[in-house]
Amino acid sequence: MKKLIILMTTSMLGTVVLAKLPALSDEAKAKAAEATAKTAWTGKVEAFLLCKSQEKTAAYYYKVAKSASKEVKPPMATPACTDPGLFVYTPPVAAPVPIVAEPAKKS
Image (tube, rainbow, N blue to C red):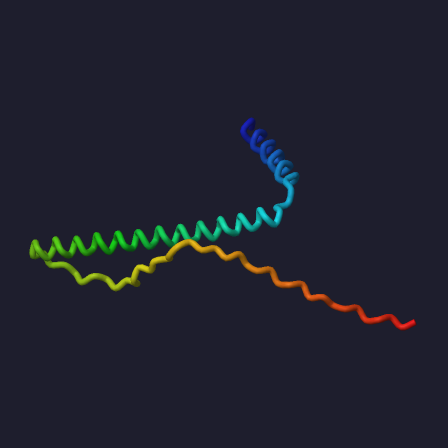
């Protein structure tokens, strides 16, 4: 029972704290977008390094198996490892706001 009361109290306090947080500024939003892009790029780099490591391990396995005269199955076809390159972030350009002229009033 105590655990339930503590859980409910902390969830209500957490809601109040989150409700009082200010809205993100444009600069903070831009930094968050850049951080998201960098995280995605880091994931691609890690996948590339994993792919290269797997290729190296498979090549070593086939070399050792061939020298030991073991029968091995042919390697499975996989897509080539693609290098994501250097991290380059280009922020999205905001669309310009069109200026609409108001029609002249007739007097």
